[in-house]
Length: 172
Image 1: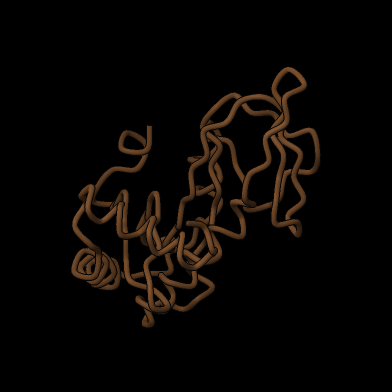
Image 2 (image 1 turned 30 degrees about the vertical axis):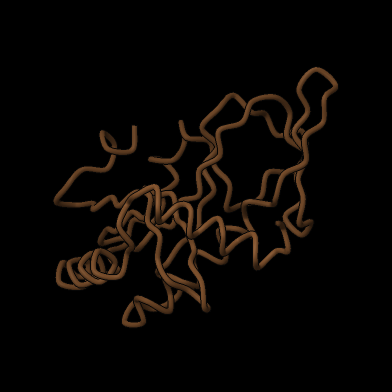
């Protein structure tokens, strides 16, 4: 759906981006570069009921009375946005937009944070940013810098990123 909804030349979609950040790496699901800004997309494929609080580090998914707690994706995406802001220092920070995209059949049973959107509404949500804020030259520079800094998409990159996360968060 992303590739069909956001086509060149108006949009440049980069997927599965691992870039260096704060002595380690961060892995970003999608970055959508457009004249309307840069959208940093964290995707979550969940079903069931979601109980969320944007200030809480853990959210809860409930499927048939089975509870599964997971990391707050808004927090996760904030780290991605910080990495993009430092890498694309020529883009004003207010033009880099975080969005968490739920792709499954999840239903929020609590307030859904503003930076969270269902996949079916993503195009409409991005369409709300209707003012051009980046020139084509800025877009090309952003895409070029991201492509130059990203690590190769490979199993080894994933292994190294997971090892970094385990070290950072104390998981062995």
